Image 1 (cartoon, rainbow, N blue to C red):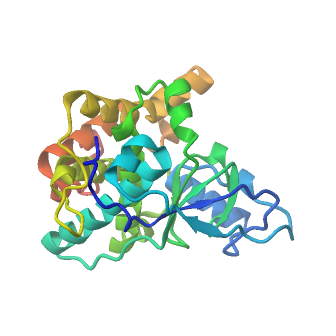
Image 2: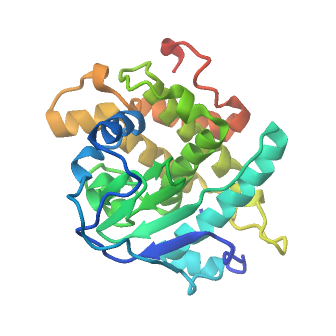
Amino acid sequence: MTFNPDADIRGGKASKRGRNTGIAVGGGLGVIALFVLSQFLGVDLTGLLGGGGGAPAASDSALEQCQTGADANENVECRMKGASASLEEYWEREAAELDFAYVGPQGFILFDQATTTGCGNASSATGPFYCPPDETIYIDVTFYDELRQRFGSSGGPLAEMYVVAHEWGHHVQNVLGILERAQDGQTGPASNAVRVELQADCFAGAWAADASEVPDDSGVPFLQPISQSQYRDALSAAAAVGDDRIQQAAQGQVNPHTFTHGTSEQRVRWFETGFEQGAGACDTFSVSGSQL
């Protein structure tokens, strides 16, 4: 999607954190806790545990150069800030309609190569993720290059913002208590881990459908209406990170018993469900495994 050039994105809560290696584990999580979290979120954090000691956490800096939609159209970091401004406003409005108390993420960190989080140390290899203990989203924007080059996504601004919207959906699940209730460490095609991920895809689709109607404080919509090519880019990104496609590429075979995110087809279909029917249609926990 393209930002309206005059949209005010200064309210986006994205911040940038410089390179920080050798950092100590944050949040007091041990190996077992990180393993459970890895299975739950579908993100391998267990290899990111550091030793004792190390440098303190890097400080965050505001993306002060990112002020308008024009900036978001030109720069990926500004685009992340603009997406966060749009998502925050969208979920404040959506929460009122769905009747739940919404509080935004504590942070949205764009990091370079490595950082510390409430879930332990993370690197670019971790991929984008949401950390429930510190209620923060973490992304190294070089992941978007990998999404195209390694996973075969067509790329594009909406594909990038789909990733943000998906992780923001995990925060909404945390607010609603879904993450805590669903956490059982199980994997497989009908597991809670898969249901959590497909619901976040659905939430991302719901935001994408309404994003061109979400205004900044002066009433200017953050984003212009989505085009068909942009919509296809978002579907391409969702399909690229399906369990079946990733396993086939990495291992040469597919093992459904280890699924944590859902197939490419499922991820596309639930994004489409949110886009066409809204966030209220995103209850992936009330349907049978065959309906996922």
